[in-house]
Length: 388
Image (cartoon, rainbow, N blue to C red; front, side, top):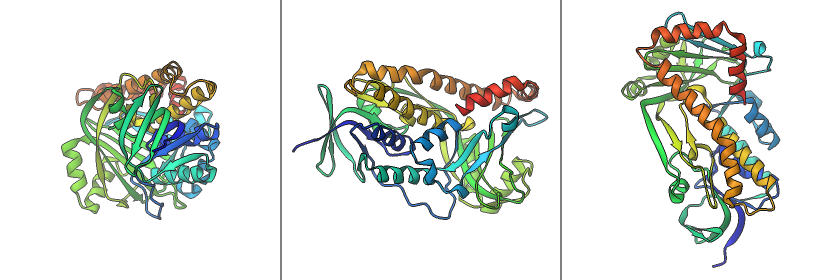
């Protein structure tokens, strides 16, 4: 059977994979995108997967024409973030003080996924293989051959793994990863709150626990998304609670900052772990997004790192468009460009987790926050780092 030939085949049409495919297609490369199932159409309910999109990622999505397809009533800029300890420690990050319009924008995963998919279909530059599953992958000299379950065959100069933390492409390529479990789970749920959030995000550091409230969009301005990082046994207890009991527990943990809470979506939990990948490229292979790294969600930077991967890979391939896309010398340029940002964010989130979420760090946690809050230049530098 004849194979369709592509310069780049991307496996995984999540947010990062779809953005990478859209960007590469815009640059005139011959691209195919393989995904098991199409994204669900958004409905009126709130998505339990919420992301804090950095201004840099937002600009990338705007250039792709995807951000403009989002419902403006379902996205929410964050103008201020208040981080608190369990006693007197507190830090306030303010967009106005930092000289920026907003710190981040809260968006639902499903709606952003749908916007990217719409942009892909409207462009028509990418071959969408969906629904599709891969039966076999073979490396043949300078190309990779993929056999799909429906009998179709593809050949690629470059195979991009955008297939998540348990990446099949990473495993096939022999690019090993080291998982470090935190012994915690992240519990997520959405709530209606009694008082409007006014675009303010809240985060509390307790012994062993980190609780975040993110402001959701909507005309009333009184919905929030919760992420509670806590030991797995406690996470299981939270998920098992009745709606009213969970709302009461979350309200109490957040010191009734926004008044009474009412559960909008059932709570779900996911394990937290650090994922370090020693090498993100090999001849004919590159990893992006969660396939390339995993970080603690306390800073909300995982998806932004992924968008940074996509943007960097596109820049490298575009700058060397006369080269073979799978040339490992070209791909190493991508790997070098992403090494420092990823390592820096992993070190930051890993360190903060151990420093602030430890029962032995109470004094340091609260004193450190108070000290940092009195240093506006350092706070502004942290804001710029998070926005990039």
